[in-house]
Amino acid sequence: MATMPLQPGDRITLRLDSLAAGGEAVGRHEGLAVFAMWGCPGDEADVEVTEVSSRFARGLVRGVLTPSPDRIAAPCPHFASCGGCQIQHIAYPAQLRHKTQMLRDALARIGGLAEVDTGDIWSMDDPWRYRNRATYHADVDGSGVLRLGFTLHHSHEVFALRDCALQHPLAERTRAAALDVLSRLAQGPTERAALLGLETLVSFSDGRAIATLVCQGRPPFVASLAEELMARVDGLAGVCLARARGRLSPHRSPSESIAGEEHLSERLGGSAYRVSPDSFFQVNPTQASRLVKLVSDWASVAGRGGVLDLYTGVGTFLLPLARAAHHAVGVESDASAFADARANLRKWRLGNVTLYERKVERILPRFAERDWRVDVIVLDPPRKGCGPIVCAAVARLNPRRIILISCHPATLARDLKSLASLGYPVRRLQPLDMFPHTWHVEAAALCEPASRVALPSHPQ
Image 1 (spheres, helix red, strand yellow):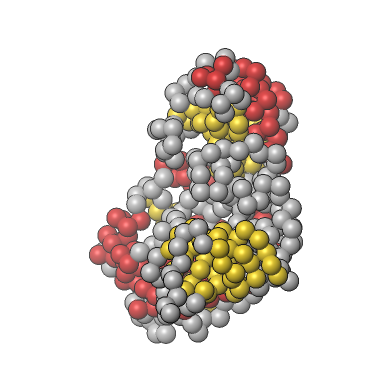
Image 2 (cartoon, rainbow, N blue to C red; image 1 turned 120 degrees about the horizontal axis):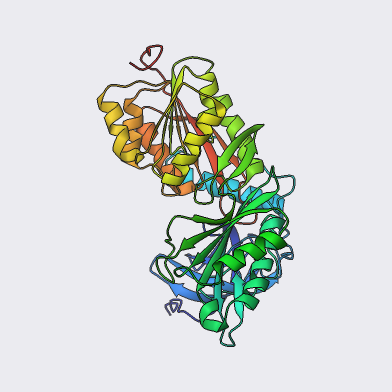
């Protein structure tokens, strides 16, 4: 008799073998891959099926029959409810192993790069309280009580957060104070509902923070809330306001300062950067410092040629490289990050850097059309990666080295495959744990051609 296919709602016993992107553990039921949330590789688990397709199924672990040796009790009371962490229930050394394997699998499956040696992932001595940025959501429950925290897994519902052990303590103190003050200041549920979120940016080096209130319009409580927060929270350097585009939209207006300072200073590797609340900056300063040094070591500029830094941000990689290069060029499309990069350029007193406020995919082909040559190209794209147009234009510039940084194994593998097909195979790859207790893994790749045309000493 033919076996009945799985249906949503079925309960199955499943042996879980590996970890997949998204943080789900994977097992097989009668040959069908099943992705189980809250599972740990090595578990034998009771899994409730929630989704079935012709190629795979998804489910939730409802009970653990035989626990994996790597399974631990997640220290956070919100784990398995909060959508922020996915793998707190896996011991940290095992997290590192599974992330490394996840990266290897993506390189082999998507990039055809099974031979690439990933090396040992760079771990953290203390994988807690590492985040410099938090995005808290706000809503009002049926009783008119304001909630300010994170959302439930796969939901827009905000739960009453006690504490997040990934955030800097100053971010959590700011959240707690904002919740207390606004619950008193706002006149009733309707006014409380005008606050849609709170964003915090913390400088680890200075121990100071800026809070951004994300609101519908400009509620009457904004000025008073900012004043009280500045008075109550030691280390809060400024408060900004951003106007939401819609209640469930992730988009908002640029931040406007309403109290205190508009920028922070963060040090990486002994050098200070200006960072604004709206600018992209690596979320983990401890690991970011190691990444900056790695990129500088790999680039090995030492006065020769020029550096092209794409997706520059506030100048995280560009400025240290420019110190050693003949000259450097940075490209950044975000207005806030570009302004910070310009300010940092003045602060570092570098006269050999040119900045372009443009989209990389639009300006880079123009550089290639001019037969422009650079020595080293650094790419730190958003999660979607570079894509074939950018990879092709980068290869046409014929650099000595290409350094690609990525926070997404799948897009990293795709871009490395493109670069290899264009004559730039990956020579070295270094993963590092930028996001402990989540499934995300950062990696840097060094690509060099087997043979290359001799370059002029600097671009013409």
